[in-house]
Amino acid sequence: MQLLDMGTGGGKLLKKFNHPAKNTQVTEAWEPNIKLLKQTLAIEGVRVIENEHEADIPVADNSLDMITNSHAAFDAELVKQKLKQNGLFITQQVGALNNYSLSRYLDHNYQIAYPDNTLFNTVMTFEKLGFEIIYFA
Image (cartoon, rainbow, N blue to C red; front, side):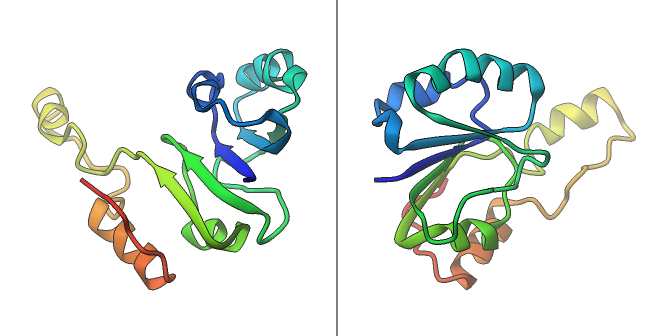
């Protein structure tokens, strides 16, 4: 299986997957993490891809069996384009309403930065692209 971990950070979570390095690629946009990944994951054989924008996936279309993404930005259409048929996209995201009450308590003028970034909207987008949603909460 070809795996891509988007916005892998320092690679700590990815290492827990124990996926074969030769079949693993990661993207990262933050320079300090890129330097770290080149000294750790790249040495082990993982392909480290520097990207300017977090949602970029600079790999061949239909080349990935699985894309994981803890909290990085993503473009659902691009994810579909890069996955093989029946490929998996596994993500954990923070939505527009995350900590809304706390934010309003601390700042009465608080405005949601990305109000359309909700679980409902994301699920609808993926379903319209033909994805089967296995689990969401």
